[in-house]
Length: 294
Image 1 (cartoon, rainbow, N blue to C red):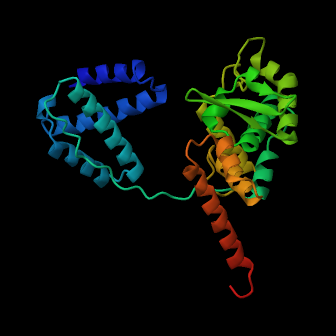
Image 2 (image 1 turned 60 degrees about the horizontal axis):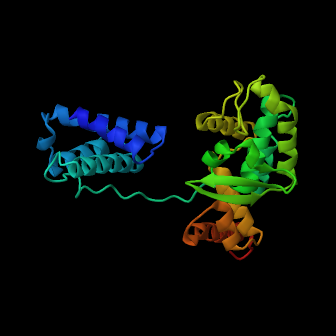
Image 3 (image 1 turned 135 degrees about the vertical axis):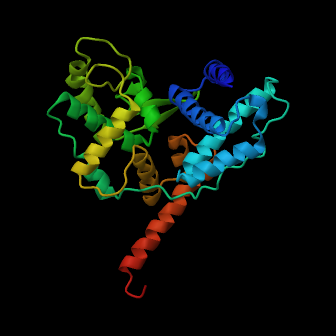
């Protein structure tokens, strides 16, 4: 059975152009699934049934995995068996009727404007790393970019004369404006700090690590957690938190929803509508806290 996993992974990489992290996730999920199937005496692909796959899903739930984790495993399972079925390795797709558990969508964590200010003031611009961190946080909040987009920005994507940046995602690109605070932080970073981090090397990516290579998502995750602790922010902050906060603060201050949609790169305005609803929730909380006849 494992040989078909190798073929499936090759398909993901060469045909679907899946990212390295996505491929690793599929490999991990499928290895876990086949370990379970082997423990039940299922050694051949043709012996896998919907019942055995459903037993695996129930096993994951009994083991205490979150609904999100179980859903991801089910998605990996369904993609794999769909591929195997299309390749005529099986007469039926045993995963076709398997359903993932329902996931309760929680409203994303939002920072107050004061919390954002405290976070952005946390980096100390006395070192190249501090200047870089300041520029990354300022630009992320100024534009609402996804972290993956921020880390993929090239030096030529930045226009400091007109105060905008070109952001690319899935073959599409959009120009996003930024303000004076982000511009100042970027100038300080590009002026000397970036060259110091490059250590004489070359890299077209705007933000580099202390080895002169492009910043990783994991590196930025650690960075933002570190500065959240320094700013005494007790909320469960993630790199995406600044994107959510950017959107809500724009809506709170009267920005047109269509403009927010374009800056965030949402293809459907209904996705952006979530932030309008969150703004209403913020107003309701303020009302309950402050109104004398609440």
